[in-house]
Length: 123
Image (cartoon, rainbow, N blue to C red):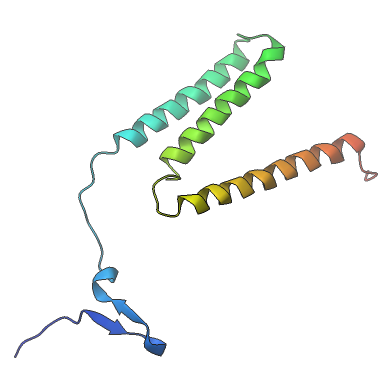
């Protein structure tokens, strides 16, 4: 009597799912040096911003633009290394979704500042 594992299994309404696709995968991965370097770089960027503010290493007029630049670099680093923005076949959709998220975030920030600036009659 021969026992064999089925290659596919029929689900409701004629859908076919490959059994091998459901099996856990334990492939060997290299040590995540890129992620560790990215984490260290994120910590250094955060520490740099903290030291700039605590030690007053820059004039007040330069402080906000430099900290915003450090934040932009850190955001790009984290999107590239930890959010896998460029690693899938649908990278275009990731970029479009990210652009929409940025537009929504900017809208919230700008409208919040506008409401606070004009006090909106709610007190």
